[in-house]
Length: 95
Image 1 (tube, rainbow, N blue to C red):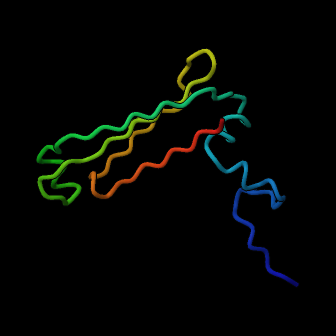
Image 2 (spheres, rainbow, N blue to C red):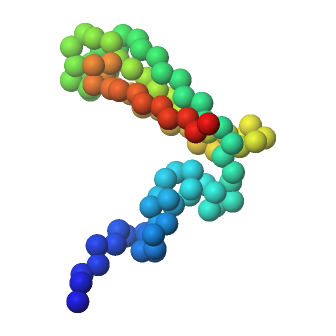
Image 3 (tube, one colour):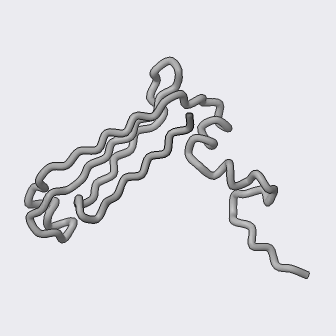
């Protein structure tokens, strides 16, 4: 008998991987994400941020992502903070 390698929270069917992203969970909960806007910017960190992030005086990258439904109601907002030399952005847009 083979031991299952199924991840917790999945059903084991072939489409389970498609329901593990944030937007799939939103749809299953009855929300319909229509657009996501991501803003990436850089700035100098303040002294507290340098201490917490253990970085020398260098720039950092901030990314803000906001997802809205067709009525422009915010469904999700997240902020990502990293030093510019430790972050990379890749965007894929379905056409």
